[in-house]
Length: 112
Length: 110
Image 1 (cartoon, chains in turn cyan, blue):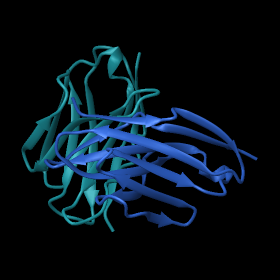
Image 2 (cartoon, each protein chain N blue to C red):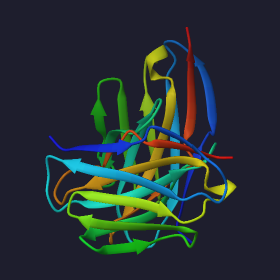
Image 3 (cartoon, one colour):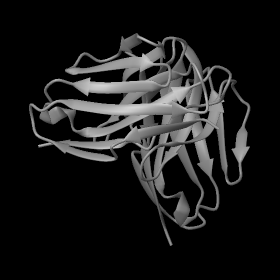
Image 4 (cartoon, chains in turn purple, orange):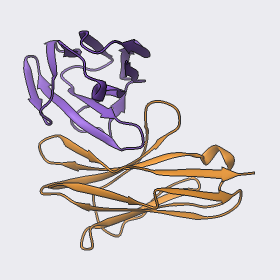
């Protein structure tokens, strides 16, 4: 079965520091990969999605970026974090022909 | 602008009650509607709905989609404390985009 590994589970970073969140996939190949953010009390907001290596689409302009250096690796980055970047970040995947999405366990980011 | 609106935002019921959660949507290229249950971390998949009027059931949970009126409902019968969670509705568009609602926080009291 397909699984997503996300780390770290929690992260506290100072304003202005860099960020790198990693998401790796097992049990499938050539998935569509997604980064979502859930701010406190809100629904999930799509940040980036990727249909293949090196292919990134951005949904929301911001100081975050994403990269997909390998088929099963999706990275969310920032050069300088803002307070408003705090939230719960989820990596997800879909495979053509399968129902629904598979989500990672998430990273709780607090920018202080 | 694409949007998914869930109601109510929060709900408190007693064990054994039946609850109905609502989800309405306005999206450009509708492909499917999905329901998720989120307890502590990642949402877990409940249902995917693509056709109007066809009820999907899983145990005490059921859901149906109305593509003419652009809404879906999620029913939970004989609620249990383990049903306490945030229930998320999401609409999938062609082009791989998934738009989530804000969620309904359900609390079931024993």
